[in-house]
Length: 255
Image (cartoon, rainbow, N blue to C red; front, side, top):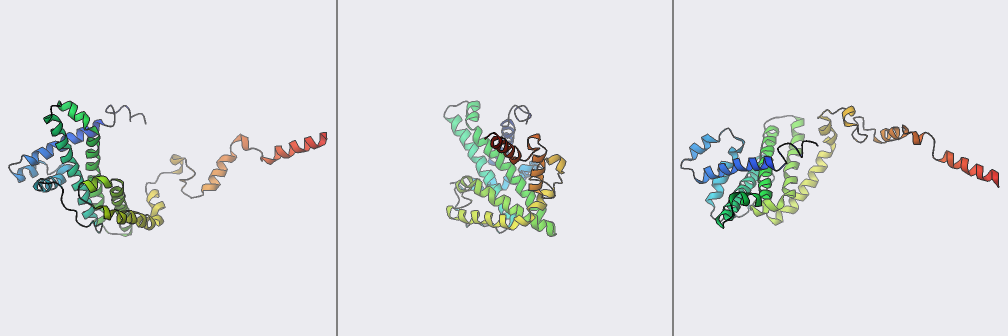
C-alpha cells in the first residue's frame, strides 16, 4: 500500500512514460521512408505489434473502417483485436495532442489535458501484450490443463471487450449488435470454468497461513473455520442463553 503514493510520485507517471515511447513508435511509422528499417528498429520491442496495425490504420483515410462480424472463434483473432484497439487509441492520442498544440496550447499543457487518454493508451498496450502472451502459451502447448487455461484466456478477452465496449465500438472493431453475444459468451465461460475455479486458485499455492482467510481455506471447511474463530473470542466463552436464563431465574425468585 505504501508504494502506491510514493513510488514514481503517483500511478500516472509510468503510463506517461509508456505513452511517450508509443508516440515515438507512431511517429516513426508515419514518417518512415523504409518499413524494413522501422521493423528492424523495433524488432525486439514489446511494441513491435503496433507497426502493422498503425500502417493499416494510416492507410484508411477515414480511420473508421466498417466493422466485420465479431468473432471470438480463436485466441489469436481476439489478440489481434486488442492490438488494433491499442493502435487506434494511440493515434487518437497523437491527434488530440496535435490539435491542442495547433490551436496555441503549450505542449506541456496539451499533454496534461490528455492524461486520462494517456492512461487508457498505456493500459490498452499492456492488455494487448498480456493477451497475446496468454494466447501464445495456451495455444502452443497441449494437455488438459492447457485446455482449461484456454477457457480462462477466452474469458479474459471477452470480459475486457465487455468492460471496454466503448473503445472497441469507437475503433470499429465490434458492432452494437455484437455485444449481446459477448455478454452471453462471458456467462457461458463462467459456467464452463466453474469446476476448475478452485484448481486455478490453488495453482498459486498460497498456504492458509499466508491467506488468513476462512473463505479461502485449502480444505474448504468455511463454516467450521468461522465458528472455530468465533469460539476463540472471550465474549463467546458462554452460550448467549445462559445469562438470559440466569437473569430470568433471579427475577422469578424475587416475585
